[in-house]
Amino acid sequence: MEKRFQIGNREFVLDQAKAEEAYAAKRVINGRQTMTFNLLPLKYQWAYELYRNMKANHWEPEDIPMAKDIEQWRGNDLSDVERWIIRMGIGYFSAAEGIVGDNIQHVVRELVTAPELKLVLGRHAHEENIHADSLLYMISSLGINPHECEAMFEDVPTILRKNEFVSRVSRELRRDMDLSQAREKQALARNIFVFGQCMEGTQFYGLFGMILSLYRQNKFPGIGQMFRYTLRDESNHIELLRNLLVELIRENPDVWTDEFQQELVNLMKEAVQLEKEFINDCLPVNAVGLSGEEFAEYIDYIADRRLENVGLPLLNEGVKNPFPWLAEMMDIKKEQNFFEGRVTEYQKASSLEMVSDDEL
Ligand code: FE
Ligand code: MN
Image 1 (cartoon, rainbow, N blue to C red):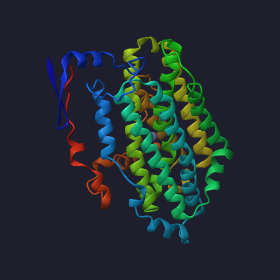
Image 2 (image 1 turned 90 degrees about the vertical axis):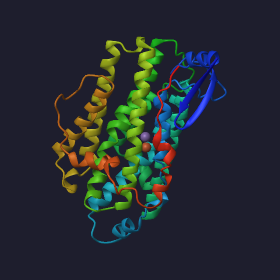
Image 3 (image 1 turned 30 degrees about the vertical axis):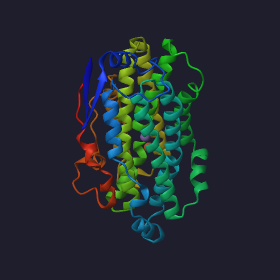
Image 4 (image 1 turned 180 degrees about the horizontal axis):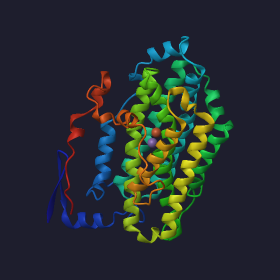
C-alpha cells in the first residue's frame, strides 16, 4: 500500500509498511542509527520546519555596511566606555559562538539519532559559524587587535567562570555514552538545558542588551544590525533546544525526576548569578543610560521565561520586563522595513509557506 506525504509544496509517495517501520525506529536518542540520511517519513515535523525557517533567515555579514561604525570608531565623539562595550561584546562572543557550535556539532548532534534532528542541528552549528564570521568582519572593519579579544576570555575572571559553567557540562559527554542509563540520559538533558536555556537563552542577554542600547542611540548601526540578526538566530536556537529537551523527556520519562528538575533550576540560578557578576564587573550599565538594578531585573525576567518554557518552576515569580523597548528591538519580525538591501534576496518565497501536519 502507498501513502502520500505533503511537505511544503512537495509531494512524496511512500510504501506504507516501510514508512511505518522507519517512523517507529525514529527516536531522539537510542533510535535506529542510519548511515544514510533518511528524512522521510518525518516524525519531528517541528525540526524540519525550524530548519526551513532558519535557512529563510540566512544573512551574510559583509552585506551589512560598516562605514558609519568605522567613522564613529575613528572619530572623537565616542566615550572610552562605549568603545569598551564594543570590545567586550566582540571579545566575549568570539569565543562563546565557537563553544556553542562545537557543543552542538560534537555532543548533541552526535548523540541524537533521528535524521531531521541532525539536519536542524547541522544548521544550528552553521549559524554559529556565521556569527563567528560576523565578529571577524567587525574586528577587521574597526581594526581591533584580535589578541586583545582573546585575552578578555582568558583574563577576565567573571568571563572565565561563565565559560567553566558551560564547558563542564560539555566535556563529560565527549566519550562513549551508554544512553540506556538514566544518569547518562540526564547528562545529555542537562547539556541541552544549560546550552539552550542558560547560555544562549540567558547569559547572552547582558551583552545583547548593552549593544542594542548603543544601537538605540544610533551608535554602531552596522554592529547593532548584525547583533539583531544574531539574536533572531539565537531565538531559533533556544526554541530548537527547548523542543529537543521536551521530546527527550517525553520519550524518556525516567530522566525527569524531581531531583533532576531541581538540579536544572539550581543550574539556572547559578547562570543568573554568574551573569549578574559579569555585568557588575564588566558592563558599565549606567554609561548607556540604564540602571543597574533594572538590568539585573531584566536578567531575572529572561531566565524565568526560559524556565517557564520547559515547564520548570520560576525563580522570581511576577518579575516584569523593565526594558520593553529591548523586547521590541529584539523581535525583528515585527518590523516592516528592517530587511533592506541584498539580505531580502535570501528570503526564498518557498521557505515561507511551510505547511504540513501529515503524520502516519
Ligand atoms: Fe550564536
Ligand atoms: Mn546560538
